Image (tube, rainbow, N blue to C red):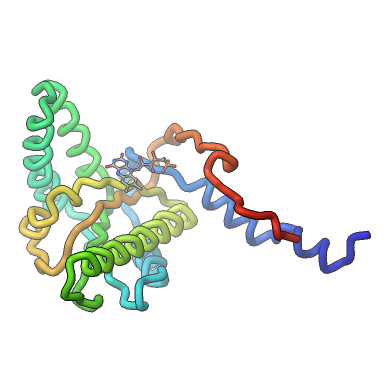
Length: 220
Ligand SMILES: Cc1cc2nc3c(=O)[nH]c(=O)nc-3n(C[C@H](O)[C@H](O)[C@H](O)COP(=O)(O)O)c2cc1C
């Protein structure tokens, strides 16, 4: 016979169901309405990032926020130059390169708000050997990923949407130079934030049993 405490342990609480709905609902949006976003909502998104886990609790992140057409244009132009160079190096046809560049440019210019999550290593541990130094950096990057996910989820919970673009990762120095940022910052990504223009197509997820290896079965 099942006792009351056993029954309770296997019931998924309402708040966990709500959280799962939020996790499943969050989607990558690449086209936005022109509608501007209130600063208070952006602050709420950044506040969510602040509460992310981080190595030694050192919070190795900083967030650059921009919304003016002027700043978006500078960013798009300068990152576009690097991308153009990289795509040409990959041997992509000029026509295709231009189409991809223009698409990326439009995404940046038409996003109401852009958040650039940056790695900030100054307060992390410093090691004499390369391997541990590299591992320390990876830990910091992992936590920045957690901070980004917190922001994406908060944006979605606020009725906004967001999209993750990796472009700054390939030219962090250029992003710093273009936006006059402290060179201790290493831009790792770019988040577009706004109100979705349409529901995007979702990517299928792999089934859980293809992802997980249970080594034993010592569960209730
Ligand atoms: C590290 C990372 C980099 C990404 N870079 C890009 C990108 O440059 N451009 C883009 O359109 N989406 C990018 N994405 C978003 C993924 O394409 C998206 O999360 C994935 O297709 C699943 O779709 P969903 O977010 O709607 O569930 C990136 C996601 C991650 C985690």
